[in-house]
Image (cartoon, rainbow, N blue to C red):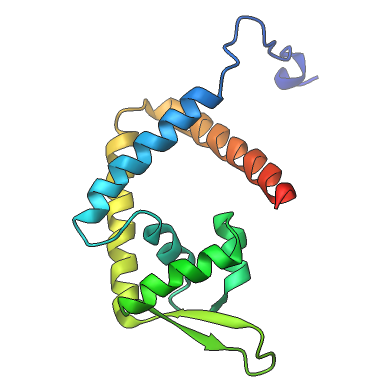
Length: 158
């Protein structure tokens, strides 16, 4: 018998079970802070995630991007209008299926995407410095677990 097998399962007694309020507060505060940082480089909230979802080296379908962002394809299309006006991306029709549209980053879009990732990285570095090193893996795992659960619930409702 291993040590893991001998260790009893943790119980949920005396553990706070309110996730929604802190998750909503965290989401709101994080988005507001990132929005302020993104404004410095001329990017609006939401554009950062869309730019990140577009692969600079290959074209991606709108439905694929929508799934990744947990939004509807029509939402991605509307957001792309703004990015296209700024010259950050372009849409291309699929030669084999004209009903299908792909998105490609322009050179300027790839540059802005790099700037977005730099902003994200700086913010990540600042936040992680506030969390003890030993706690970071468990916190990250827990947050990604919650994200998968919420995204799964959302996909079933759409």
